[in-house]
Image (cartoon, rainbow, N blue to C red; front, side, top):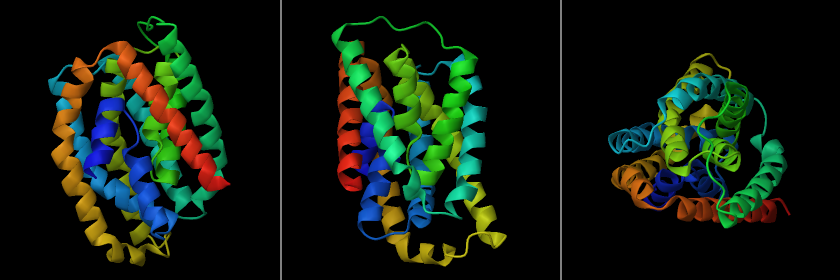
Length: 246
């Protein structure tokens, strides 16, 4: 939980991907892993968002466009993941990560200047897809949205801060959707969640300790270094996801 949150808060991705990957490797079903990770993220994303707001890493115009789209996609993804196996989407996520990782590294190498703002027509669909992927895969908001925005020219510091702040509201919406699915009988296997209470507690404890450091790390690292780190991380995630598929 600590290591995943340090990476997520500083680079805008990977807490859900890392945490859910660990749970899945222990044999936790996809829906239960996603619900467990989002339960932990209620606490870690709140701390991370507060850190980024405090260090002025948030672009509020981008936030107002990204948040509603992400929440809508997350709620839709929750109802899908409680009905089917989320592994169906993994090949597409791995391909996307591979392409975006290489492109971000290319932009860092060329020292490309960030764009001042993104069009709503780009941000909203990206948020919708990111929220959906996050709920279905137990993680994916950061890898989809952060890489998409930075890859299309977004300033790393503001992009990471904004995406992390929106993630708190996304997590609240997805967690509520899981609860509604449970109490309406839509999610038949939800009883297994009680077996993973200690795992969730560990993710919460480690994540909350690490989250306040994230905003400061993002603030002090140079833009090019951030882009190289993000590109490298995304490429590694793509290789890891592809290896698991094979």
